[in-house]
Image 1 (cartoon, one colour):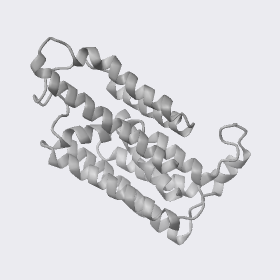
Image 2 (image 1 turned 90 degrees about the vertical axis):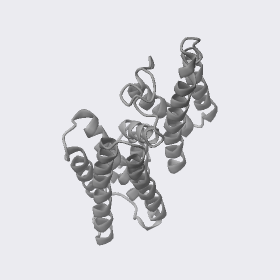
Image 3 (image 1 turned 120 degrees about the vertical axis):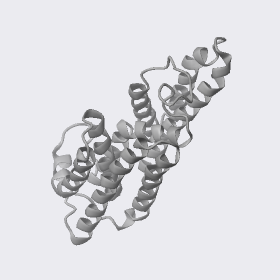
Image 4 (image 1 turned 30 degrees about the vertical axis):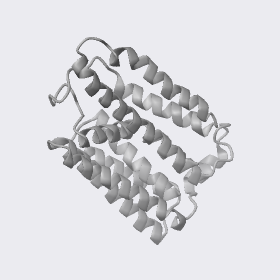
Length: 244
């Protein structure tokens, strides 16, 4: 599963870099380089591993480029290109995970020497997968949600004129926190507690979604909220399935 973990890390680093500094071509290059560096640190230096790392780097580059292209062009269809790339890359990485050797190298030696209780006895493969799974809950999760919304024509109600201005704020911060919390609870065996978080979000936003003011916009806002929320939860639950 080492290749899958490195792929997720590459995606995550790309989107985090883009969130911090929106410079053309920089995020995807940083993400591809991060994937290569992590692979070397994990001791994946055989001929097959080098080929796999190069393929991962190319996929990460394509991810960053297609995301920028998808958001830069109007209409829902461009957003489906990066979504398709993400799904195909993920399926291919899972299918090829049995071919990946066990990670080790400097990363394995560091894990053997670390004294943190949470990392004691943790194998390098498992560490890479967990790191990638949690990392994509941050900026990559937001990107995926926005791509899903754009592909259905419901993204950015303030800018595209398809929906009225909204009072709902902080989604770019609350979304990652929510996904990380759900994933952590699920991995800890507290699936019921994770479902409580999902229910609580709906209750907190129910007053605004059911407001009597401007009732003609309530259905549009509800669709926007539900689609974005379910896409966000799916990112967390999908990561849980991968690491389980």
